[in-house]
Image 1 (cartoon, rainbow, N blue to C red):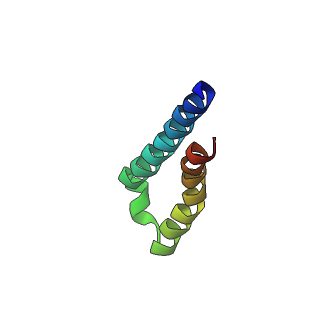
Image 2: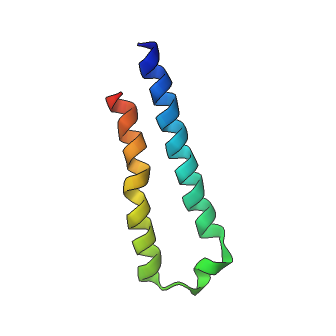
Length: 60
């Protein structure tokens, strides 16, 4: 069971890092020049990348 706990920590860490990247992306001045649809597309793109490690914490 120890390996499972170790994997969960790794996946939580990956998810947290990606979440922080998304938040930091919103803080960039360059986002101000984007259309709403471009911002939405970026969020849709990163949504699965963020959800994957969160789901993996429950699988492993």
